[in-house]
Image (cartoon, rainbow, N blue to C red; front, side, top):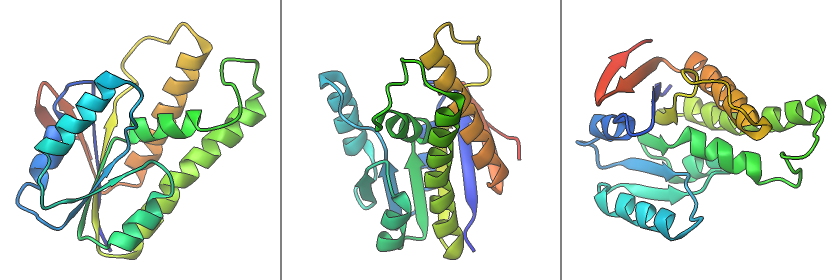
Length: 183
């Protein structure tokens, strides 16, 4: 059974660099990039990330049904960057308008569907011998967002991070480029 590691931290904390450094000596890595191009600046960021990554690694770009990508690629190491971006893409890849009046029941269903995407990924990893490292953004240290959509995002990201931490063997908090093992 493979090991699951969660790496969390604030924006530009060094969490992605830390996660990549863990695997720098490995060639058989499936790198799951969850960002999507939304504008020219984001395209430049994605292109820079592609260029800086180990060119021996296999890259999969997507944010849904990642358990299928893991099964089809069958690599001993998997690096998912980033959980929060994946969750955001899943959150907005829906018909419901989250800025309008939406019921608690609908929000609960949306959250359960997002959590299920991560559960299927973890189940697939734990079936095999792959080691999964997931990078996420820490959202629990800020103020309560002023707007409803911000609060929905914060709640979902916080709950997903808790779910993943509970299901990980190791959890690291990275700040100022310094990793601290917290589990």
